[in-house]
Image 1 (tube, rainbow, N blue to C red):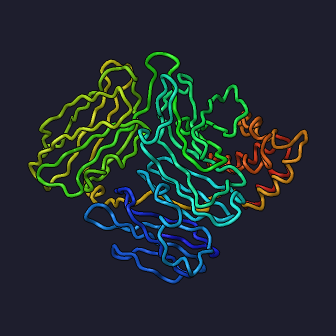
Image 2 (cartoon, rainbow, N blue to C red):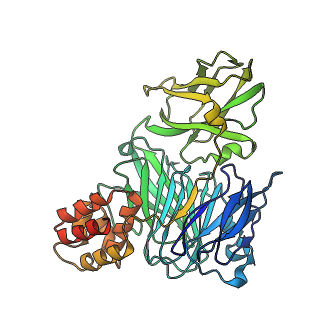
Length: 471
């Protein structure tokens, strides 16, 4: 559940995947302890000089569950043993489909929601003191800004909130998925909400303009966008098509009940990137995710045809075909009733999805509910860690040498890293190298890539420093 190293919690996991909004929570901090799970119940055990707060969450359903508030520091006071999160940060900060709270200190950290493909990287020194951060996602229909004509939301509404009234010293890096199949088919905008309301920023990597937020589509995975966020607030990616019938990426997820009987539903869900999987399980808490995939659909390409083929001999679909109207990016679902003839046999089938009026290739998903599936545990994918590739001391040394203006300063490194659009943005920063290295950390590129970029930018001595740090 939690690993401890040198008195610092470096990784933590939260509640089961099937969640509901958090109605009430109580922090219970423990001195010099970490939490572990034994026989389905949480117990406290001594270990190291780290602390972890335990959130006791009362679900609106009939079952109770527990969640972790992971801390990367050991600064919790004895007086904080029993305090509600609501009293600390207010109820509005804890709203959302998925909520990940964490206490982060000067050493920074990484908050990850893998199933939502969402990451928040806090660079070292970005926070002056230990701060409670809350990362959450919301449906795009929640608190939308006033969009331009023709714009649609192509991501979840993401909230980064804090117990601190002060902005971070250095921008955080927020990375998340979007549903644009081909970026050049769209005019993309990022909406940012702070205490002063919503602001809109054009996202144009070819012709960057001065902006308080830098955006970068990932070079390896174009479906991910990285944003430098200088303040806490809400963020939403929107786009307007440049031509008719652009292609969007839709997520396809398949669910079955945890306890299957002689007849059971096979639920197929198709949603835009801005719709979270939690929408599916809000009404039914006994669903289990079988698999998920992505496919390209044309906005005006007609309905999506979904059918089940090649079912195993002991199972029969009562209805094996349906059509979904996917003209909007809202969540669409259909449950195929499956009748079982022999419960001792394993279910397998192929799910075929094809848009009738589109030239996009059909999506074929192979389904199998065997022993391996039955042994799966629906563990939470929320993680809080100190998962940095480069030691902080090395980053500080690089920043001290590249921040001062010269012919081979941080701008040369930006060009060598393939982020030339960062140069205009970086000139307004107190330490552009620090933010550039945090952006490199968020992109999860290899250390060899950074070392090679430093050599290309004419700083082989810094490349050698990196090489020595990883030996």
